[in-house]
Length: 109
Image (cartoon, rainbow, N blue to C red; front, side, top):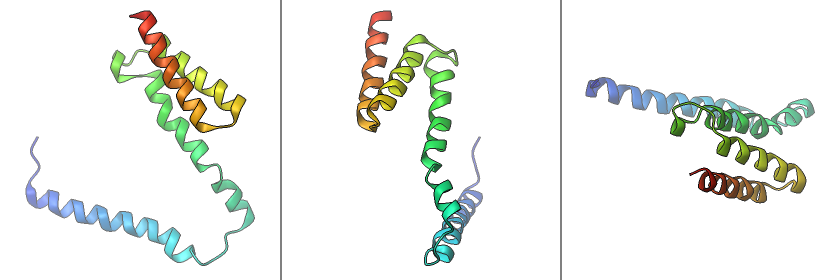
């Protein structure tokens, strides 16, 4: 479906301004104000809460398999979790997950 160019070029700047205002509302207005301790503690967990929400659909309903979970992705996710908890480091966890994914895919092929 084609979108009218006028609509497209109206929506793009509107979304840019809206995104800027959303970010400015937090950074601009509150940037110089010290945040309460409870809010700083809660914001510390933002990445930890967002990342599983981004990764879980790719593991449980991967588009590469038509939405069906497969053992390679499940084992890679498990390896990533185990190495991440064991080392408390992101890079070894990522490398372990990637190596597990490719190894299990090669074994099952």
